[in-house]
Image (tube, rainbow, N blue to C red; front, side):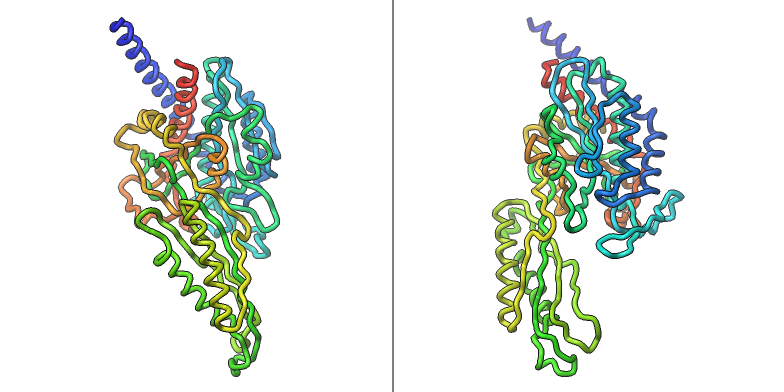
Length: 432
């Protein structure tokens, strides 16, 4: 009996090793195609809910692979369903498609020159967060797994999602809308995997974190209403500019005095202040917008309650009023990696990248609407290195900036990791 178990273990280890080698070979063979897809998407970016050209290319590719395709999900989303020839679980893989209203400043030959209207302003459009690479990687995963259909013990659902960065006011979109429209049903998804390229993690490395990985986020709007007057006679006014300045300062006490920062980080940021039309006119109102970041329901309540209290009471102290809306236009839950799933799939990530290249990372206060999928099914979201080897992460251009840059040599690792996660999860559920 002991010999049998030793033989079975050796056979299983050989099988897993052989799979990793096969996937690695297939991914490396697609390297040039992945880069070409990514550069095309990068040169022709589209904002959230407007990914018409983008989704058309993706749908055509999936259809060419014999994958069942549904378009128009949550406005422009594409969902592909690949049914393996053998029974097993349903694994969802997700990539986001939207670009950002950023004017590109890089010198790359495929830099974006696109301009469009966003919230009433003319803006540049740029893939300044790496969603172009996410799409290209998942298209390659679809190509590899569709070629393994006869050996696939389960079903793969490819989710190409619009509007991860949020939608313009009055629109619906993103992961939350995809979930509402049934993307995790018919067939019912058992697990979801996703990745995000990171311009400040070295190529060849993967980082991950069990539990709370990325912050929950809620945006906010504060309108301070005062009384207008000539700038030369401020005593005739209730100055909303002055009141807004006091509110901004007072809001900074929330994290430093109300949140236990030894347990979880939190953020209160005012990102825009708009008021007035002329240097010598005190306006009637000022509009501020900002963001809250948190990792627990308790901290979320502390932040929201204190923002409302401080804004309204500070305004009242100066004879003004403050209207506070939280959330204002969008809110994402905490991106939460199921601890049991993360522990189970860690060996797969290590087999894909090499054990020394898979690193535990601290929680980050950026947010991801991948969290909406994780609210419904167990999920694992990890980060893929996109910084050139040897570069300084403190000097590498960060996401959402005009100089954002990704080293394309790391894309194939993302393909290998997603393929291996899919196959290993299926093998574990089918008892192989």
